Length: 118
Image (cartoon, rainbow, N blue to C red; front, side):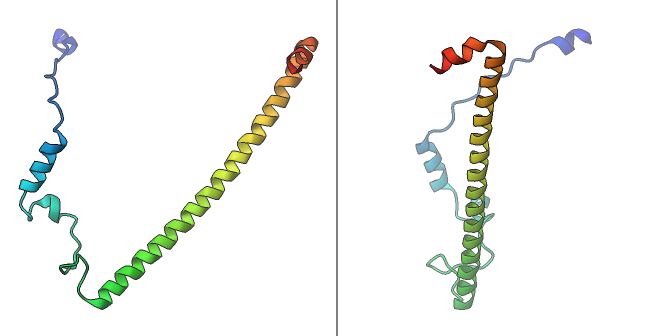
């Protein structure tokens, strides 16, 4: 049993991934009721334009999209502010680190700090 546990299993080589042409041919040949196309379909049946025919439903959908856009925009602005703050914190830490390294160099090798700054 111990020798089987140590035996290395050799897997067959993977086939090459399909080309773009092969993928497109496969998608074009799939029926419209294929689960790939229907699993994420909206619950409201869209009209020929791809939007719900009910004007009230369309208005509500646009309103919800607008709300989602505004919320996403606010999150992006907050993330940008957070990144700017963190960037400034890193710059400050870098300046402090350089100052501390200079102090250590000066303490260990008094001539090294003067030589490296000049």
